[in-house]
Length: 489
Image (cartoon, rainbow, N blue to C red; front, side, top):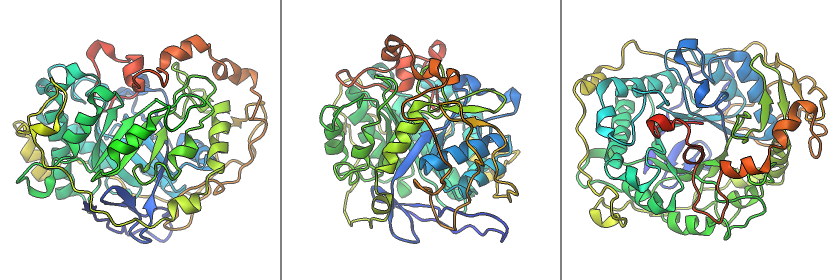
């Protein structure tokens, strides 16, 4: 599979750090250098699902000052990508997208939200697949398609979280993937990958992977086939290992994938604080042939105790112990070697879709996809209306407005985003703002969250000995109306 990039013309005054990426077989590739790209990402959703409220006219990528603060901190950490779950396509995202672009970071974006009418549901899925729902997903594409650092869209997130939800949901998720790809093909200057973010529930994982990555015989341009497959996995807990965390099973299962595979969430928080010992393995030789990196869950501290940064609504923030530990783990890696590796030629072929690919009784084996709902074809043909748009804009001041404290209470001095050179991506050392006293201390402002009760933490995620489940599945957030595509906690 090859997804071509198109160079985006930028004004002379605009910072333009990243190169739009291609998908070549099972890797993301920089088309200018021919090097593969490994995702070093963080889930970025301040406020969690509860923080998404369209009436407030604000989302994680709409406030320039907040984005400057967080882009600077993530740049110091060494991150090169963020995943954002809940976005309002009616808002302007130009400044935040430009900030993360200049900081050398790509964006992986969910097109759904936890609100009714803005996602597929998992119980009577056919009742949630209609034109106005698709119009909303297309609007997210319109709002972000012109930013060169838009790396991919997720057509769904854990809509299938257990076998009971797998009877009919897969064909609808695959239909949404088809519809998004059709819209992008017609309205975007460059192809942008679309794929599914799956729960790492092994009972349904391999059937989900087979269902979404096979090719339907006779389908033009394989429009319903996912361009990528990602999973939310929490099987590595504490001082685990490649085998103990069952990463060996994942590598074996995905080694011949026709599309890129990566962790769309990882970072078990039992014990807490986390040692992040999986980092060296995820970006090491045991995994990089099969995996394209991963996204740590999550940036901001929420009640579920997965945060790297503790912050208040008015802007100040305090770094947590996990921030320093993760930063130190990234510093141990040789990213020049990890990111500067040429893609080896392979002939990983997608399987032909067939009921024989599905091995679990009760999992959907029907590859006759739903037809477009009434009115949807007109939207695909003409575009959404009103049509949001996005473009890179000039950022005149890169200094962070808000106060950020180290864990010992000291203030990070002169914190700012450092715009990178054209075609550069962020890596440890790109921004040398100094961190202090993080390795073994925490201030009173951060201690309650850094040392959360271990019993509560144990309930948040299952350990490696159990069947790994994702954050959404474990916490049961939004359980009143089941698990939604695009859901974030």
